[in-house]
View: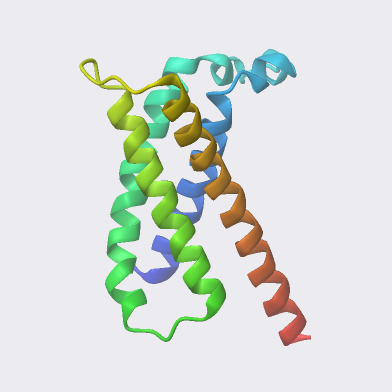
Length: 141
């Protein structure tokens, strides 16, 4: 697979992760997206949970594939911030997986902090990517 195809797979995976991550919150049923023909599955928590886990495996594989390539380059401040966000998302995601194991017990406060930190890293990554895209457009103009 060439870089263009892998970049497309990466972007589609990230979009699908965002979609299934938000679908695990009851917002699609609450705001009637699940009532649109063909979108009833968006209100199925278990399905979205399993899809999110499967997509996370794909994401981790893609990030692992990109890591050696990224380590050879000179990093800007925004690239470092994005990498820290990806690391935070992966680590908090793994903690979320651990808390869902049958023999694991995490306090409700820790679960809340891990959930909010995971979501916070996702939102921060979105802002970093948006800033990088805007800066690139400004530089190109």
